[in-house]
Image 1 (cartoon, rainbow, N blue to C red):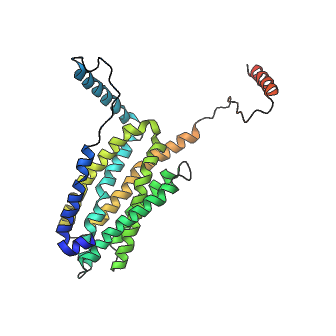
Image 2: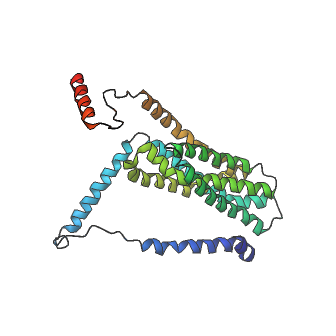
Image 3: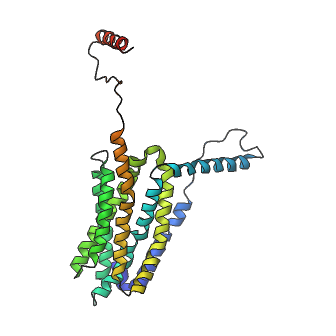
Length: 290
């Protein structure tokens, strides 16, 4: 990005970057689904397409039951808010740096964006390991890292020189990179693995809607207020609000799990040393219980 910005300017660098990303489209179109091998008579039936449509509609209706899962709406709203701010930092930071520190070269400004990517890679590598240290670490890391991403956006307006912007870019990239790897294990912790396929599409859809609407809305607010700092203020608010939306549900779930009565009639088996003796003691225990 630094080299492209020096040679072609920011407009040319972004056009080339967009052209490179478009190469992912034919790769995605080449991905094929491997269905179950059809039987001898499956392709000879005249109503095979009708049966397929009915089957797809039935599966779609089954997917809608995920709406009734407790916490589903809270997390959808949370990821909508995350989407509103997820692309704002790398989108607006070059113009903000050039406005705040006039005289900077395009290469120096592009390095800020590059450092976001470097921090993102480091955050993914680091927190993908940390989220496996304990069963619930992914949930706590998601809450902490999303909050740190929002606080980093607030810190942008305090930067006074290029070194400050470099450090802020690395910190933001690390925090958001960690969030991007722990959010899927976090959803499994909260909603269990069986609900993940149904929940995943809805969450990504809400985040995508937010990513489309976020930058235009923030640009409009910044133009109305005549203050570029509002872009990063609103981005930080979006990240922090996404956590505040789900905290009541998580607290309620934790309280319910603590109040749930434990089963006292289960016999815990730790091991068998003498099979005959243990079988006899088990039969005696069963008679006492009955």
